[in-house]
Image (cartoon, rainbow, N blue to C red):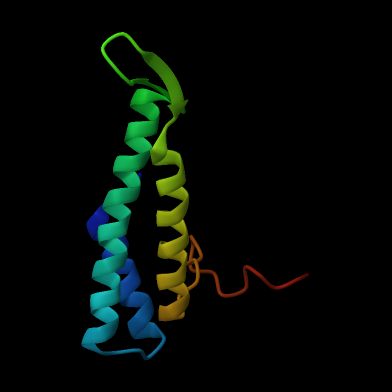
Length: 104
């Protein structure tokens, strides 16, 4: 998994390469990174507890329900994508080859 500092550095570098500067944009990157932390915690919860969790609805009453982290993960990912779109950022090429997307 990528490290948090590497991701933030990459996002800031992409903004600079695109000629986008300003505290507002850096604040949006901070928001993105906060959501990144939340996303990882939600994923960890789903791995630890599973997609269905047991709940207690009284002293002797038990049941199962879906893990709420699944829906929250989907919402969090959606918000992260919106922030990237607002920043005008797209995925980086892994090797930096400018001709990677060109057809032969």
